[in-house]
Length: 455
Image (tube, rainbow, N blue to C red; front, side, top):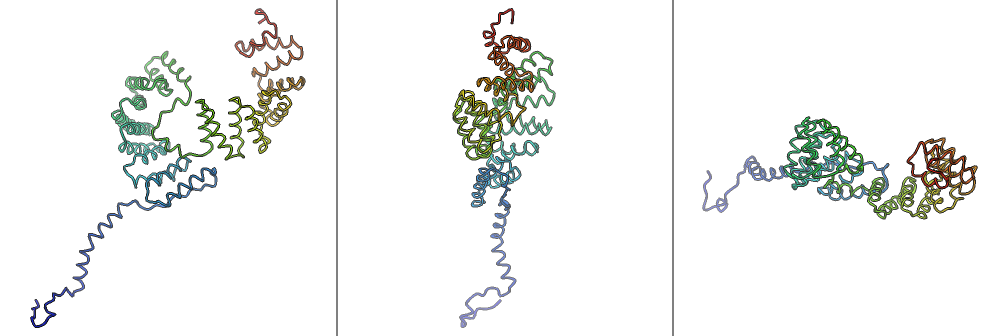
């Protein structure tokens, strides 16, 4: 060891090791914790993946626009779970499912506690990969409030059933019921699970519970009918099957507390047509009209959209508006028989027989197999006193559809207008025999001066 020399000032200063290996060892000991922490932080970050850029060449303009806008937000915020999730939902809403699944998985990487992203992955996967869908639904349930957890567990049970995994379905539906005992869809799926196990009595108890919680649901009544048939109660089973058939098809739907977030991102015109149909069924004609006008404005070259709007106006009694919609569309699509036929029907209601004859004659020329077009044309000809043309149109309609009652009714009226009372009576009696309860015949009785014996 070196000695300090009091006469040499430099000897008073301790010297660091001059060996390079000692220097390296010291630096490594100092830097290792920092490097390890940085490496661990990098390790737990989501692996960078390219942002999907789908081919939009075949998409509607508004669809391409909303996808590009959502993608631009993601490009600006590539580390945001919300940006990845929103882009995934926009893609899923417009059936870019593979890219949507990638984006939703990425959103879940950034926000593993958010139940939305695994739920929507399950929603996309359910029809094609129900086993994977069940796993996603279960992850969503584990991160949700009780009510939403019950719904997600129920969908997991449905997915397991689709995957023929009855045991897993049983476990999932039990978790759903434990989360929300009064949830009607859980009781219904519990009945389906018991049915899959051939446990008819348990299935009956569950479906009765579902029917109590959600009366007059079409799926519930149909399953109830099947279970009773298995138990030998055919009369009651037939009664429930008949009741189910009398319910509208939309009665099959179960409310989905998650799905609105996906649907609100959908902007394609066919979706808006569907929304307009729902609005019309709920008597919200103005909402239906707004949706259809938006679609027609965006897609003036697609005659089917104008056709839907024209029918809405016609059926709601807005005849002039229907004529305006048809006229504008016919300028672009002069060979659309349906548009011409609707406008012709509007002219009939306005008693403009000449215009009606012109439009309906063109409609029958373009679609000669449509018997109802020929009936309307016969009516227009008859009102115009063109009896020979009316007769030809009537007979054409009957030839195309011999059981078409309106065509035969129109022929009776034509014979009466021609003064051929006996001929009209013969047609009436034949029609009365084949269609004794046809309401269209009742108003003709007085015109034909028929006694009860003659009828």
